[in-house]
Image (tube, rainbow, N blue to C red):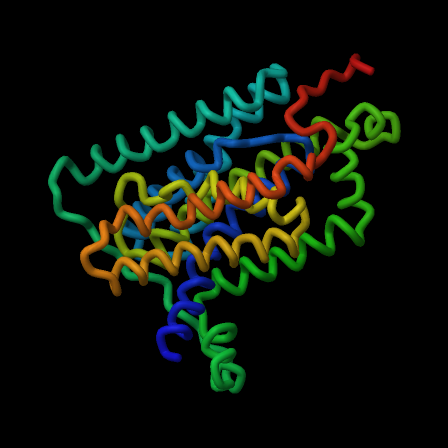
Length: 307
């Protein structure tokens, strides 16, 4: 029972960075911006968050600066795809190449080429009095770091925003038919740029979470494919806030499971267990990827003169 409890707790913690990055892609795609550069945005957010926290000792400042770093890098993608109408996939892959390399360069310049890993103090958990003492669910839901509460609160807000507010419906209209939205007076270009700001910020926060709330060190490649898994989570979640939460919890469970199987198994190569989250991603995309098309204008360049 204790093994199952620890597995579920780990699943929630592993799902949080995925949730931030998946929500980033959700906001991006709802405005018609298919950004596959999430891996790179999370990588730069991870490094900047760790570095700022290492220098200042503040995890909150580290997360804020990680978000700002994600926005700054994503503006390259935004200008290229919105203002210059470049291909979304090409520049998304460019972000996946450029941002991790930039993060590795900054880390090497600041800390040098030594093998010693610098460490920081992680963000402390906050237990909600009374609720944290509830058997099983108390420790699972009400004794976490503030970033866990923020992630799930943001998912609830996202569902309400897109389905119950006029601003959210206008936002979704840009991703469905931007030309029609423009005729109704909706500022299409402004919303597309806003989506890139939100995407960069949330991706940077997802990366910074890994080095300020989950692991107290930074290592190259620590994102470990979470950006691509988050893309699958958006498809699996059918471009809805609630669906994305369920998908991220599923992939978080797969990630937590493979770590515990590595620890508890002997004689089996650990690489075999590391495949579990990625195999789950492939299976999910194979099962439902072709059945869900997403917003109609996804990945299509918008030109104001075009009908």
